[in-house]
Length: 311
Figure 1 (cartoon, rainbow, N blue to C red):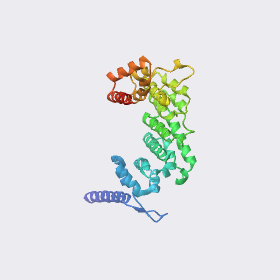
Figure 2 (cartoon, helix red, strand yellow; figure 1 turned 90 degrees about the horizontal axis):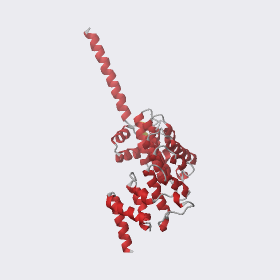
Figure 3 (tube, rainbow, N blue to C red; figure 1 turned 45 degrees about the horizontal axis):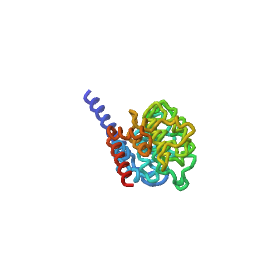
Figure 4 (cartoon, one colour; figure 1 turned 60 degrees about the vertical axis):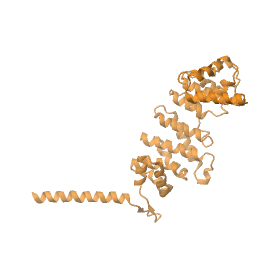
């Protein structure tokens, strides 16, 4: 009985040592049989990603290089894939990883999908206006990535954070994603956050004014105020709301600025038009905002008034 127990303990010890050896081997650099060069392990990449240490993640990714990080995106270990996605935008040549990130935008794992959206959006933004040919990245890959972001942004079942990241990615890459940007679809979303993001990010200065006027009539005050800020921005140097065939369709900016739920940044965006207006209602709106607005809004009003006095 004693001998049997000893043998069992011995086998257990050998198994533990074997597993420890495998773990140590995984943590060591190995020789790539194709290139003959050392492949750095992904352990440090995972650790930096899990700690949220972007500086260390960038250093590790730079040591590994884009080819090794690309293989991390295909790893069976979910943690390694997530680390690779977090590291991709930190590489100066990260755009080379776009092809490997593309299939992860439709991954069944929600977390991987969200990290893929963040990585793709950052890479497109950093590369917009830069010739993809310089990096030898196929234009079809960039277009497919834009389309995948647009599809994800339009899905009501997707997590809000991922949808907003996708919209931001499309907004930050206007040249690359021009054909994929479909604001009308997002402006019809059930979620006001998505409608507001579409107003601010996807309606270019050349968009029909009717789209902004319709958004300014949105039942959600946050969306309407964002549209009001864009209407004021579109007015250009004249600082007046653009003339349309039915002026009554344009909600008063003063009302949009005073509405409960209007965000400070959108209120500030409407201030130049309110200050330049001869309408007593707009003047009254300025006074109310100066008395009861947020600190940022009050400071913006003060700057406008000081600028007017100095003229």
